Each structure stands twice: as C-alpha cells, then as structure tokens.
Length: 326
Image (cartoon, rainbow, N blue to C red; front, side, top):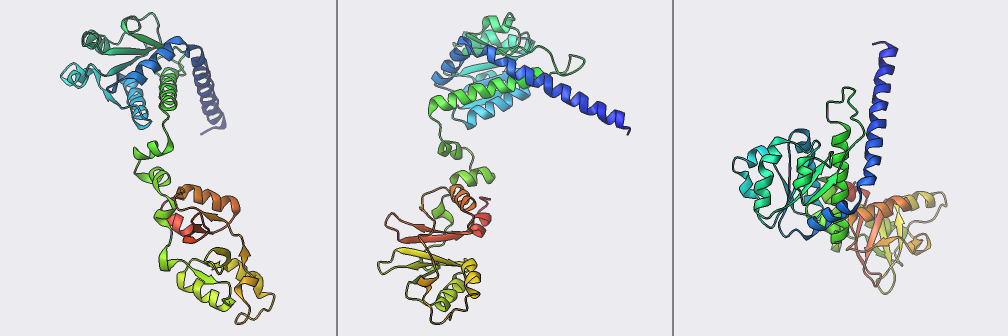
C-alpha cells in the first residue's frame, strides 16, 4: 500500500472526526425549554421509558434505553415493527415513549404514534427535523439536527447517529443528577464484571481478619516479628502497644533497610525499627478506595483499624488483585 493511500485514509479519518465533533458541539443550541420539558416528563414517569426507533436510530435507541436503565430511569427498547404486531401491549398508560427518527417521517413510527397517543401515553420525539410529522404530534420535541453527515455521500447515518447518542446521554445524566443517583445505586445494577467488583467490594470483604492478622507486641524482637510475617504471608506485621492499639508496622522493605545496620535480630526490639503511625483504612471503605490509597502512598499493604485504632484486619496488593479490584 502506497504512502499516498495511507495518508488519504488518515485525512478522511480526520475529516470524519472534525465533522462529528462539530455536530456534537452544535447540539448545545438545542438544550432549551424543550430539553427541560423532556427531562421533566421523564423524571415524572411513573412507569418506564419506552425507546423506539428504526434502523440505525433503533440501534442508538437501544443504547439510550440501556444507559437510562443503568442510571436510575427504568427503560427498555421496543422495535416499532414488532410493536405493530403485538409488542404495543408492552406499553402502559404510566409509561413515556421516546421516539427517535432523524427525518421525523419514519413510517413504522408514524403508524403506531396515534395508538400511543390514544392510550394517553406521553410522547417525546427526538428528530433532526423540527417541522416533521413526528415532531408535530409529540408532546415534546428534542431537536438533534446536524449540519452534515460525515459520510461523503451524505447518505449513511454518521454525524446524526452520534448526535442522537450524545443527546440521549445528556438526558440520562440530567435525570441521574435530578434523582440523586449515587455510585452505590449504580453498583446495584452492575454486579458483574470488574466494574461491579470495584463498586460493591468493601475492605471488610477481602481483608485478612482474626488469627490471620500479622501482629506482634512492641516488646517482640525483630526475629519474632519475622516469624510472624512468615506465618501470615502478607509481607508485613503490625506492632501493637500495651493497650492493643496499632502503634506501627514492619515490612519486608524495612527488613532490607536494617540489614545494613548489623543489628542483632534476636535481641533488638521491633519497636526500635518499626514505622510509627502507619497508613490505615476503615473496614467499610470501598476496596477501590483502598487501592487508590496504596497507589498514592506507594505502599503494598494496609492495616484495617476501627475508630479506636484496634487492628481489625490486613490486606496487600495481592489480595486486591485476587479480588479483581485491580
């Protein structure tokens, strides 16, 4: 393949990105009273948001419905062709329909729109033509017009579908904020995969507790601390004071540093070489926050303490990796 052909590919790619970027930026002018009215209708919906659309608009509609559903607004996609053959029964009077059509003249949508209206269902249209039939019959119309498609033929939906997707995201995020939707709420609808683990797992779910916590008293010798570290296998041990509170920590790294000092490991108290006031974390903190803390402080292990400074558990990077948080 010649260099000129490769360069042509790159130039065409840049052109597409430039055109679609402009299309998305141009949507800001449509964030008007109609957009606010659409948000209010969706927020007040006592049922579900039913998204409908044909062809590429249908594919984008499916994504918009999924985004709404995962951010606190119950929603699902209904194919307008199937709606004409029975699936219209899935729509109730408590629902709100979001109909997507770039032209606003899609036959399959116009065929069922009167039936939707007759049921008393609120209809929001999202089209690129504010003077279209679908825009006229809707309770609220949200414009998604673009200056041009990125397709050089002006035929394949490109800029228009990107703009539709972005406007759908704008609606979903506006509703998310209005509902006070939190990360915990999001986690409840995303229990699977790495995202779910990061949002649902807490420190107490993965920490070593009870007899598995490596701990020695301040009076213990370095050699006794090393035995505790070997038995518990976390590469560290906590050091407790006379009241049982965590007073310090001793790690594999600390051991390497003191070896040059020719200390007697069998007589030197661990309190003399431990790191005092170690970084700790609470048991109810998200595991993902524990990971960030360890990364920020450049440490490989953490002790988990209660409000009184008593060790409740311990964990290291391997535990986070094993739990799928990393």
